[in-house]
Image (cartoon, rainbow, N blue to C red; front, top):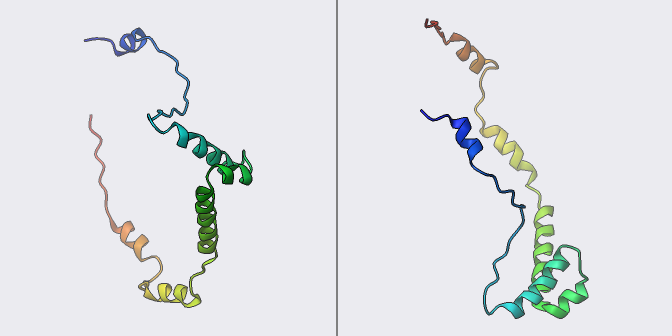
Amino acid sequence: MLNNEENRNATPRVERPLTDREVPLPGIAAADATASVVHQWLDGEATEADARRANDAAVEFWQQVERDAQTMKAVKAPAHLAANIMAAIPVREPGTIAARQARVEVELRPEV
C-alpha cells in the first residue's frame, strides 16, 4: 500500500495568485469602455457625469434600482400581521417537548 503522505509531498505545488479574471469577448471592445466607466461609478471611483457621458441609460437604470430598493426597505408589515401569526401558533404546555425528550431511553453498550 502506498503512503499517502509521500504522494502528497511528491506533487509540486504551483502558487497562483487568486485574481478575478475576465475573458474578453470578441466584438465587444467598444461596449467594454462604457461599461467600465459605469462600473467605476457604481464602485464610487468615477463621477456620475463621467458615467452619464459613457452610458446615460445605464446610469438611469441603476438609479431606478436604487430608488426601488429604498422604497422596498421602507415597506412595513401591517400591525395586525404579527398578532395573526402568533394566534396561528398552537398553544402547548411549557416543557412538553423537553418532557417527551426526557422519556426517551438510550442504552449504550461498549464494544470491546
